[in-house]
Image (cartoon, rainbow, N blue to C red; front, side, top):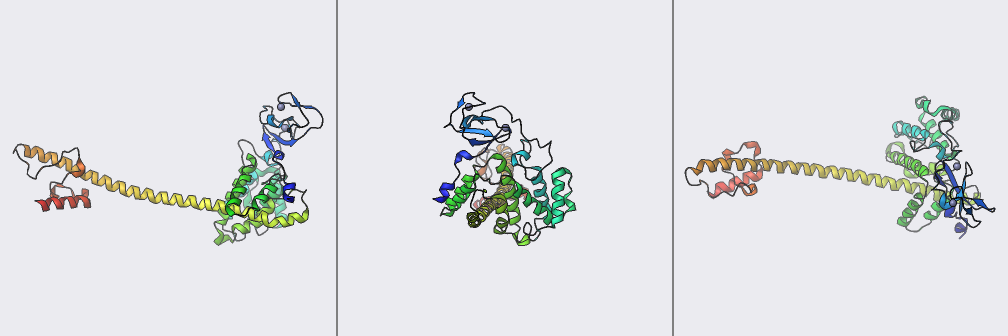
Length: 364
Ligand SMILES: [Zn+2]
Ligand SMILES: [Zn+2]
């Protein structure tokens, strides 16, 4: 019940629209909605932009066409650390540049490194790389740094987010889902909370989890299981709000770790299932191809039969009688009997065709 009390209400969720970052609020003084121009009553659910203080009804905040005047322009500032995720992303850049850059590099050079993300890099080098990324992320050459330095800097970037990847707002929700008894229920619960994340947070979380799945799949080499990765990443992406009692937050650690591990394992299973689907599809495709070429070959044989038969027919018509019994009409080539083995070019003979010929010969 204490959990329930501390549970944040759905109305606290942050909405992002036209560059605004709307948070829920209630006005104690009469305020006019900047969208519909009518009064926001004291009991009304209202929204205010954290950046420009645009005020409106909650129901109006997604309708406004006014762009946020304080919207952070990634082009104007190079800072990457300690900046709201929404300020590092845009319609063209769904995942922050620094995330793309670090994840791609580690995905390419660190997948098989033992203890990747568990081992730490040198403090001075971490500081240097961090400063470099904050100054001009694009021009930093990651080849100049040890892989563990790069991994440490990425974890730092996640920890420095003013609102962590899985958000303060949904922290209690994630933990509540982890308290469900059945594993199936827990999975469904966790995914329904993930569904509530804003697009920006979801995009980057997806990118990160896919990266962690790729690392966990190489556990034999890098010794980093989904659990080992969750121990490292849970404190970076599923942090409790400062308002939570420190003792409670320590008790929450096992739950946050299990939660992150569950997501990685689930995505890993989906990934493996997809791989299995692909390989079974490939198997089916090959089987279909083999079968198709068999059918094609027997069709060729049939076509040949038809042609042979018409020749036979023409040649026999003058003599007024058929040599080898009654042939079915050429329009039903499936039941056509071969005139004789020697008439058929060897490569077009399938076993069925041979069988048919045998029967024909035996019947004569
Ligand atoms: Zn705004
Ligand atoms: Zn309004």
